[in-house]
Length: 76
Image (cartoon, rainbow, N blue to C red; front, top):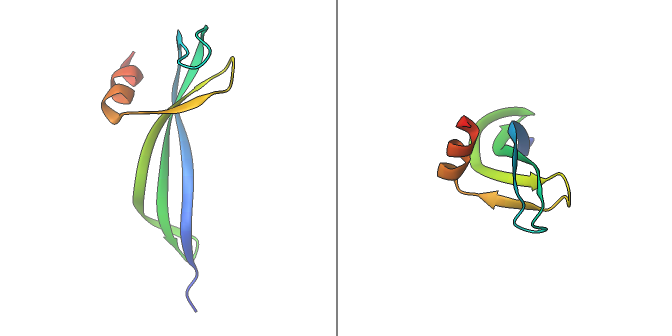
């Protein structure tokens, strides 16, 4: 019997003050990286997908960000 699955871990990369795409307010935006890994017997083995995203703290809207833009914003 094999026990396998996917597990997603969210890494917070930083908090930036930017204008939200959804509500238009200048508010804190949380930049995060979500890594989904394949796991076997509850041991994460290798990454399957990596996504970057921003979430507005004012309206709670979240949206995906390209990797290059996320890396540029994380350096700020």
